[in-house]
Image (cartoon, rainbow, N blue to C red; front, side, top):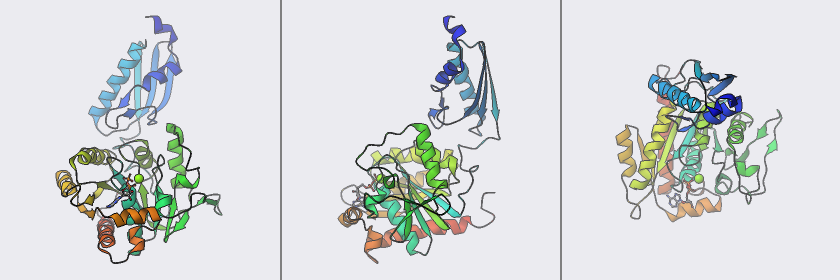
Length: 349
Ligand SMILES: Nc1ncnc2c1ncn2[C@@H]1O[C@H](COP(=O)(O)OP(=O)(O)O)[C@@H](O)[C@H]1O
Ligand SMILES: [Mg+2]
């Protein structure tokens, strides 16, 4: 074979970039699953991390790797998987965030369903219930949190005492967003490793202090930020936001499956924009299908948008209004889930 003599570490790396982890559907190099590559003429030795507890997944991965390397001219491929199976990419195995009792991911299958609106209002609702709350804007492609919290676009974070970054405080919660670091007019182009590092910095280099909840507003879908979050920190649970329509629901199913794969408990589904325009009931249906709690619905209500645009989210703007009460009820259900989970017989070791 002509490629036979050209097998190098770089070439192997290039080949492995074309191999996707079957469940997460992301290449094994970006996922950081390949720890060591050794090439001895046409023989390749790989040291890999055990990403899944499922032997079927591992076999499939092994087959794919052997096949791409075989095509590139490898005569022999040996793969060592190490570490105990991680049961997903992080969840169980990742360390808790120091000082923070619960990291809660707010996620959705697609964009524009009101995920950031829900994340901000739920964070404020948790705060109203007496919890110390932080909000991390994990949507580093399109950060919305600064506007929603009314933080001026030129406001920047400041260093804290210990060389860490201080979050910016607004409406009684501490927040961090890429919008506090970058010019909002400039598009942000992310390369995998930089993105992964940014998520790490937001978690571990920010002085969050003592928090009961750190709410993370994730970008839509099942991408890099979700995986990075699960790798860097133990996530206590995920809240899935959807609109009532079927189009959004197919994506919701994917999102729920991703969290299951990552071994992050799904706390439940919130249906947003319920009412005559988009209908109602889809969120409850999908929750039932997946046997996760339905946390409640939030009506399509112009005031929610106006409040978001004005930088005073509805929960902060109007006490006792029907809509803010709904957010508070959902926050109560989330908090309640942890009282149950804080029962020693249920906590993860
Ligand atoms: N229940 C609602 N009623 C009216 N407008 C809403 C509602 N939820 C969200 N919005 C508006 O819809 C737009 C998209 O919401 P956003 O939270 O940014 O979505 P996502 O984060 O999912 O992309 C925003 O302008 C927001 O103010
Ligand atoms: Mg958003």
